[in-house]
Length: 51
Image 1 (cartoon, rainbow, N blue to C red):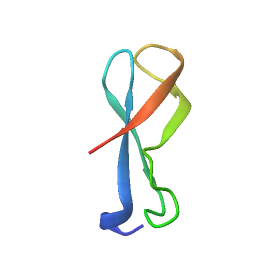
Image 2 (image 1 turned 135 degrees about the vertical axis):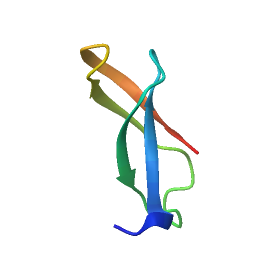
Image 3 (image 1 turned 180 degrees about the vertical axis):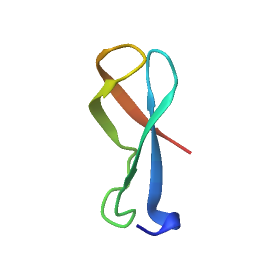
């Protein structure tokens, strides 16, 4: 994984950064929103892409 394509996913409830993923910035213009398991909250919550 190249560093310039890496994005951070932050929990919408507790605001902790739990995941790192990549996305193609040329094809996907909007920010990523994925429903992932938050280890802090211990439930599946929407995670949004941060800067």
